[in-house]
Length: 515
Image: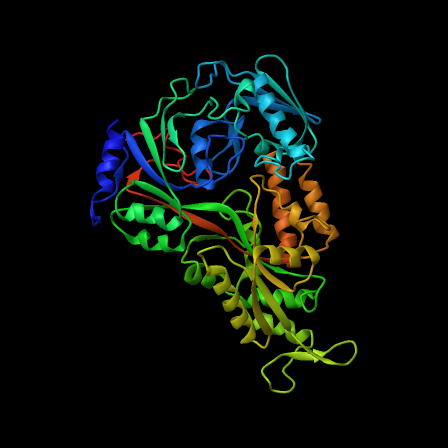
């Protein structure tokens, strides 16, 4: 195939300066990805981020998440719900890539495989789609085209769980099972290349792009190097260094949002962050916009709450709570009796025993390999707080050490990130006593709101509860949300008109793109 010939030729060339304007993709695309773990195409057991974007082109779910982050129909053409029973009807004439008919039994078998893995007591690996177990009590087929779900958590969020990839019942344990997506795997050499070609049985209009070749690299820096030397047309990267390409004329830089929410966690059971005024003062003193632009080089999407800014779920009305305001911060501390009584540059006040105490705390932080931005952020926060009379130091630890401190509640401040689920529900970090509530935040009002959220059956009522949760979050200041990390798709060939490019769906739209 000419695609492989072109690739081999270009890898022998020296560095080629890039001057031409980016153009629309035609019939083929070469994509550079990082992959060292994936040895087989197993859509129900993904091992790497970049492969998730590949599986997204090969497999469909009952539902798909649209540009505005609402569930839309995919294999399902409709759904209804009555009580705890949700009924999904499949589209007519759906076929897998091998030509076999898609039936409700295939959907049920796929879901049951996921549920069995999630419920297995013998394995610590619950699978990527384990959240299905939170929503589904029972799933069954009612004839050829109807899937019936008995919900264990009966609310609008269940639709987000119905996005798992569907494969034939007989192919659950096989490599490269047939799918219902726009593309199929023509050839796969683990660690080297994967070639996708159109699925002739796809249920939508055949794609214009007839071949997508994925070239695999060991390290993120290798991916960037391949792009620099024009060995590939397109790369996915989360490296901060990719920001330099955003101003180039030869590339298009498509920012995408990850599910990684960066936060400054504040322990409500530890002095002095057990005091709401101290937490609020910290929030007013830290310039998160500076961190986003100067430290993370704009490779983020700002948010002040656990929900995604710019989407239907985000409550813009709470923004006034999160504006940097040193004067307001110092007024809050002054009202609590904090003052520099001995001119040593530190705010102090007497404790219950009459002893002088300061706003002493340590920021615990862990870092990702080859990326020191979180440590730099911790130092910036410490320097900022210290300039206003706090007594803050930074301690860098391994991920396991920080996780242990969070679980034990043995911390005051911690810079960390949450991997947010596809379903917009932050109850795991906000409900009193929940496993992700590392801050020991306790609010009966918040717990009730989160529980009420899980009873809403339509988008309008669900949105209202999300808005109320964010108002409560702003008022209580349980911790500080800073931003979702973002990455960049660098490409010389435009292949999509999708408005919301998201991690795990980085080639979304290529199947419907027309030159």
